[in-house]
Structure formats: C-alpha cells, structure tokens
Length: 313
Image (cartoon, rainbow, N blue to C red; front, side, top):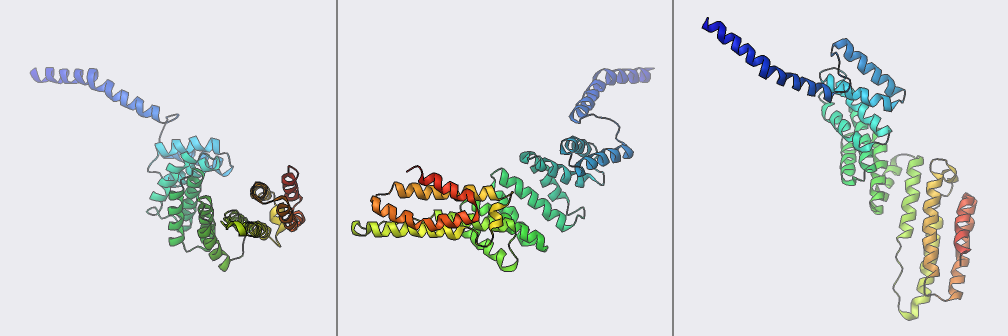
C-alpha cells in the first residue's frame, strides 16, 4: 500500500511539474523552425527537392526559407551540406551578403570531410570572397583568395582568383601590387574583358597619382608644363588602344567612361587652378587636344566629358 501510494505521488508530481516544462521546451523548438511538421525521410526529401528546384529556377526568395527549414530540421540528411552551399549562394544572388557569410562558411568547413570536390569548395571560397568584398571586409577577402591561389590546381579557378585579388588590391589603393598580379595573369593567359577593365583602371589611377613637382621659382613654369603634359600623355596611353569594344561594352563601358572622365576633370581643375599664367595654360591646353581627339575616336561620350570641362572656363 505504501509503495502504490508513493508511485501515485511520483506520477502526480511529474504531470503537474515536469510535463508542462517539457511541453514548453517542445513549443519553443517548434517556434524556432518555420512551419514545423513531420520529420520523416520522405518529408525531408520533399523539402530539399522543392528548395533545390526553386534555387535552380533562380527563385531565390522562395528557396531561402525552404533551405533554412531543411537545415534546421534534417541535420543528418545526406543533402544537408549541399543545402548550406545553396543557401549561402541564394543569399549572395540576392545581394544579401551579410546573410550569405554563415552558410558559405559552414559549407567550406563541412565539405572536405563529406567528400565534396576541391573545385566546388574553391568556387564556394570565391563566392565567400565576393561577399567579403561587397561588405568591405578586404583583409578577410584577401586572405581567402590567397588561400585559393595557394591550394587550387584548377586553371580556371586560379584565373578567377587572380582577377579577384587584383580587384581587392585596387580597391585598397594598392595599385602597384595590383599591377604586378595582373602582369602575372597576362603572362600566362590572354586578357578577358574583366582583366582588360582592371588594366585600364589601374593605369588611370597610376596617372592620377603622378605627383606634381616642387621646383624652384626659376624652373616653376617649365616644370609644371612638363608635368601637365606628362599627365595628359599618361591618360591617353591609359585608353585601351586596339580594344575600343571595351568602352562600348554594355557591362563595362559606362564604368570606364565615368572613371576616365572623373580623372580628366581632376586634371583640368588642377590646370585651371595652378599658378601658371594664361599663355602657359593655353599651351598645355593645345597639348591636351591629342588626348581629346584620341578619346573621341574610341567613344564620343569621352569627348563630351572633356568638352564639359573646357566649356566652363
């Protein structure tokens, strides 16, 4: 009798104290997963296949929550690591770069042990590098792209990684280093449109960073005239001789034109605000005509940019 009574008391205590607590934990777990439901193997396959179908159809807004459900619910599923990659890539495709970091890092961490191909892992590293660049996390981006360059044996991956490194160094203002990397790229393969764009940009920035001399009073006019002429020649040589299609390219043409115009405007302002007398400025302006004519031969918009500067004097 005493034993039965003790068992009844234990059951009562469990139902009144422990059971509500367990139910609350279950509710919290369910609330943390969108649309909680059955977790059978058949259901897991359905969730993944639906998410993958949306991803492959470029329906990233639909794919993201489905991959998130799958990852939270089915951590032992054979497609779990692939889902991490697709989730990170989907966020990146939508330019949600901060959100892409976690899934891409998880994939890169888990993929080697799961037997994923090195090529696929390197591609994921380059995707993560792109997210770092867009978030202005340049030190992380540079470290990761150097890792790819050191370990990858795939020529296409190495080519892509070299250009990404050029972009990172250029954005950090490290143009000499960027030029050295681009020269190594050009030494072993033909320049594609991305590479030619970077080459043009680096050359323009090198021209813009030419420093004015600090001559004595007696040499001031001659030195300053030589300096402006040197800059004009530099900008002319920066224009991609023999590759005017880049300037007319829909993807890159506007960016190149805008960069060139901005730097030419800076040169023009520097000339007009210099302490050179009017006759000296006129002589330099004549020297700049060859640059203007060459620019016009490549793209008319470059001439308009130049004329907008001279018309304001």
